[in-house]
Length: 144
Image (cartoon, rainbow, N blue to C red; front, side, top):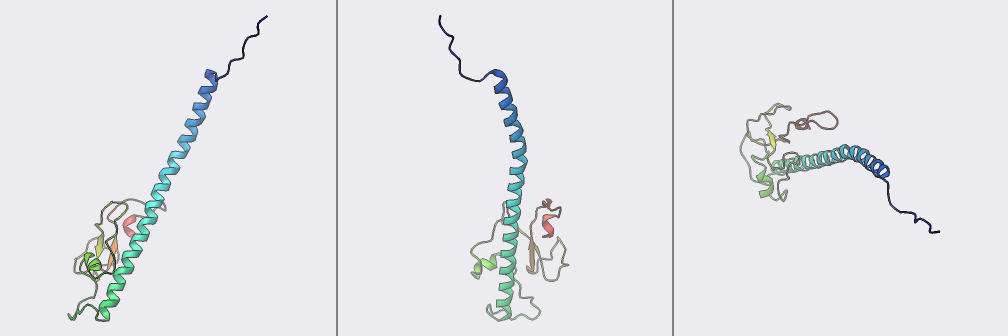
């Protein structure tokens, strides 16, 4: 009498169950990875804003000390453009906004209201992202 060989492999039911489990796991992982990407961009945005604001403050301090020879009465002492920060070697290059993927930042001048999104462009007192998206905490990016 010849014995039947036991066949190895997966049955159709086992294969379907495995695919369903993989599908469920993938549907859970995808939103988490999207959130991680958004969180990474938010962290990068905060770092770039901090870096630029500190550089603008450094420019103002240097200007107040007379380092740039600006003697105009009534001048605020803030840079006219972000490129001036690189020209004065306070920063190597203007950081890119991770939300818009450009180096185009919204600016406020010293004479603007603190929450204004429109500037009179006389100088650069503060910067913000031009993205109108909403952060994970519910705040608008352009208010950071």
